[in-house]
Image: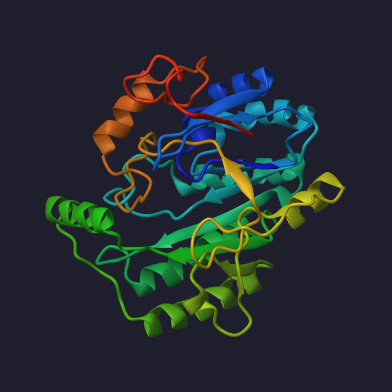
Amino acid sequence: MIISASYKTDIPAFYGDWFINRLKAGYCKTVNPYNRLVYRVSLGKEDVDGFVFWTKNLGPFLNRLDLVQQFGRPFMVQYTITSYPRELESSVVDAERSVAHMRTLAETYGPRVAVWRYDPILFTSLTPVEFHRQNFEALARALEGISDEVVISFAQIYKKTKNSLDRAARKFGFTWEDPPDKIKSDLVAELARAAGSHKMRLTVCSQRQYLVPGIEAARCVDARRLSEIGGQPIGARLKGNRPDCRCYASRDIGEYDTCPHGCIYCYAVRDRDLARRRYGEHDPEGEYLFPPAGRSDDRDLQTKLF
């Protein structure tokens, strides 16, 4: 099984010690956010085919990647770099540092390990279409030769996303919009040309309506890439996590409402104060990234093994 760490939270930035401790222990526990069932996830070498790390700040985890490599299974990093204003991303490291992290990653472990994410694309008075054209071009130029793929998507305006955007707009004095698909499709084509000029292919994550001619759907959890990195095939099947998702099957070991980055568009955090509090209460020696509320153990929860 491919282990995803994690599209629910930023494990490399904030929970690297916990991940390494669980890797040494050979397992971790997670809680299904919908039915609250507990899962014991094997992290034994015999059960793991590879790892996909998701992050906006690889810096705290760079010195731990040697331990992951010594584990003997391939890994790749989905690294989000958007260089948005602080009103939208209050605690994300600046793009220059992130690009430097990506360069170190590629130089140390190979360019196939590093995948750049420019997502979600958010349209505000601070980040209009022209901002994205110029910002994307500058980042693509900086990342040329470091990554061979850039994954994009447009912000999904869920109810909690709308509420967060409205609060931030009132606080910081900007406006936001969700423009028509034509504007988005035209931007995809422009960004794809910019990516190509810097030796990257552009893919779109879980939004097939924006797959303009010549653009493919992203496979963020990509068994093919992991197979190339590791030098041997991984027999994973395609199994997306949501509609239009083209990822291979994986097991995510993160937990919602635990990322303190403070991005106002984040779908994985419904309450930023709760996320900061949970981060402060996190136990790097624990079995869970964050344990079930009000439980000291899982004796009276149905436990499933993987």
